[in-house]
Length: 238
Ligand SMILES: C[S@@+](CC[C@H](N)C(=O)[O-])C[C@H]1O[C@@H](n2cnc3c(N)ncnc32)[C@H](O)[C@@H]1O
Figure 1 (tube, rainbow, N blue to C red):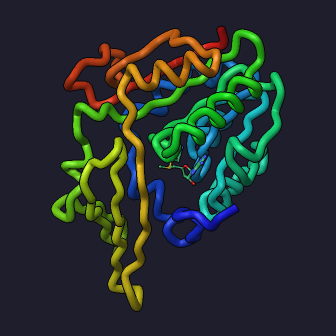
Figure 2: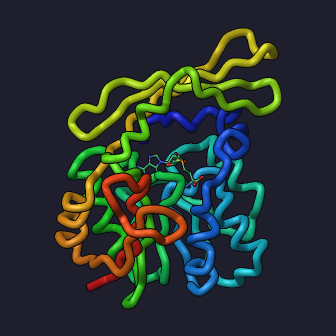
């Protein structure tokens, strides 16, 4: 497995402080709590599953992520299964009531082939009646235009900002710089995210044998519109 942007343990340790939640955890929490077994794909630092356990979830919680640095953070709790990998490396069959990808982790799936592999793996991993919740930023809202060096995040002595390239072939690439007076040199991470529109997303879901049970444009459950920031989808097995 290739090394990953979040393999850096120091940057992974800063992730939660630099990425305050925007309503996503509160949105998914009732679905997690109602599910006996949950798979969090691209679980990162594991904060969603930590929160589920702290909120009283007593069933099976599994977090999957390819970044060693992120999983090192997640492993602060040992009452959750943490798996190093991605949906191309797993073989779960009919084991989960709910699968989730949040923090826009879904947007790291860049190619059509990666998307097909991911949806097929989620489909196999779900039990009959199982559901898959994930969100992707609405391309029509053009969020990347605000990812500029003028928008700075700070935690402790660390400052971070993005330098973002153009929207090309449905994707946007950006470099995140992390700077601190306590470090000899800045650190950098390179990212590319794909932005799918609703019709394209629907095509992949249908091909995978998944149907849209619910879809929203924001965490307050308002519908998807031209201006809505998110495309939040709860899909279920056909
Ligand atoms: C923006 S973070 C979101 C983390 C977490 N879900 C959250 O909400 O805080 C994206 C995560 O996706 C993981 N990731 C990268 N490539 C992936 C892939 N192919 N499959 C699953 N996860 C991946 C990264 O390591 C990272 O932890």
